[in-house]
Image (cartoon, rainbow, N blue to C red):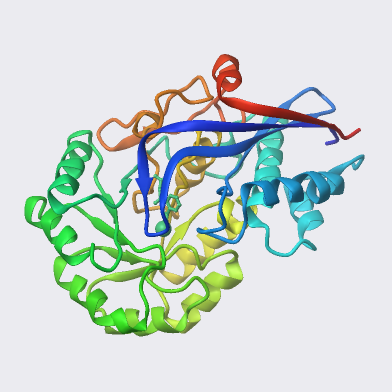
Length: 371
Ligand code: OSB
Ligand code: MG
């Protein structure tokens, strides 16, 4: 495969409701849509997921875009590329910058699947036709509002709820949900808002029969997470921000820092590394599930394909398009029916750009010739 050109669209999609985490509030999803064209005229799409501010991981949207344009696309310029493994090898000298790498590597996956005349799901060995999904609920003003939010999602069919927590908005919020929905699988996601002095606050959550506590401590910490996992009787610790590579998962496993991994393709540098991690988790009996970053339709299509692999036995943070946006930039909306999303079976990622919508939400376009 050879690349003819790349187009980068800077897009801002308004969120239907602001999403509050322990870091702050997001009111719109800003991203770059990466479009790669090969020598046969196939088009592959990637979504550059880095957030505008370096609060979730170190990357920023504009910084990551510079890495894409100045380093990663230059690595591919004029080359005859054998497969996605080669793309990943060409990017390997660039340290970190996982989301930048994932945006281009994934677009190459889309292209490869299209060149093989198959769906991305099939191309990566995913067999499920539909996947079970959950919903991630941002921090709400009070317990009552949270319970009502959760009620609407349970009524919409979501079979697993994740709630954002922080010190001061944890036990009473989760208990309010538990009292109302005694059986629903619950995850509490702290986005790194706790420190060692808060250990007892987290241990208290063990009484509420929640399935997992996600990333309570620092984004480089394995020690406190291990300490917590050791003391928890029922609840699994799940790592998110910490995990950028298979190496990170292996270390977390060796140290006993967690029993579950929230796997995001973008956060680990691409589909190839995500597949390696999923396999390792299955081999070692760790729970692996597909996380989300409020993706638009392109990013969501990758998540759905990944979660259709058999390592993923726990519902992911992959909700219906309508849970996030009034209008998306792809023609097909992902719908949740009985808690499940259908896996696209068209060529490649299996979704098509809605040109009109893309125009409406695009701030600027940059074209880079690569042949
Ligand atoms: O911590 O999983 C997270 C969104 C943005 C950044 C970090 C996280 C999240 C979510 C949303 O929880 C999951 C989704 O896409 O629905
Ligand atoms: Mg998280």
